[in-house]
Length: 329
Picture 1: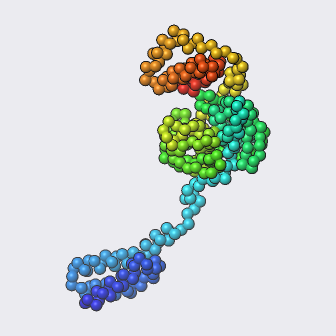
Picture 2 (picture 1 turned 120 degrees about the vertical axis):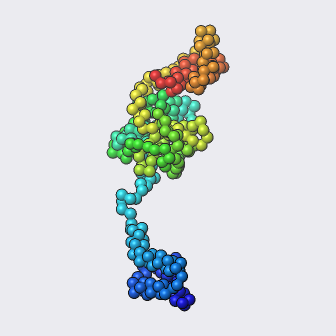
Picture 3 (picture 1 turned 90 degrees about the vertical axis):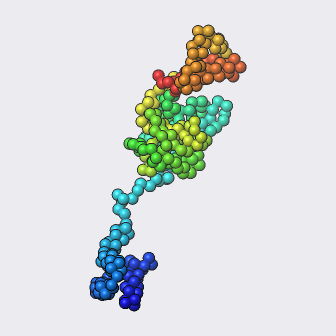
């Protein structure tokens, strides 16, 4: 009897060994032989154990079907979307800005139409004397600045080009989804969408120099947002979502006129106006952090005008623009 039990175990071990071939042909005469051998064992426990092995052996065909299903190549619908770096590069442009001090810096912009309309951060271009745009093939384009939004730090810029690749705007987004950006050197950066706000998103990636104004894409290569600035929390960044593009309605010419004022007035009497100071003292105790920010800006601008670091008109321009960004129109 021990010999018969040994033969049963050896037979079943060969069938279910980890390194056994999955496609072992099942000989049902052998199954009947094992049943016969098991029937001769007096131990009820061993007999029940044998029945379990037999049932499993009889269902080997189901195991083979499962393996076949697992090894079947996925259809195109089953394959997860895959981010295409080259596609993102084809719609991303370098923006080179020369400022009043003849210092040149670089930023990013993203094409959103085939006729040469790009979107970037307004803060990239607000203090410029010269702007040019460069595509991935090193072609240079002159730039015309279109509508802007100081409040949302966005701007349309236009180049003389047609039938260019452009980014498709994302219809939706979810917290936790993977997002992709391009570095200054057009290297791939990856992160996670951490928070969704009314006017933008927080991503768990620190905005590096030269990436501002660039695109934040999902894994379908759809444009989710425009990267604006490093957020208050270290190693996170804020980006304006594409639904804010409809807010880009201000005329740049009006902003430019204020920015390029040639006044040389350093009159800071507004800083010492008693009526104004009563109001500002009240704001200084406000729990509203945006009001605190505006008050701190007011104090700083007054000091800069007194030191003749800024003209009164330029200080007023900065103050009104920041007020618009903080509180809207």
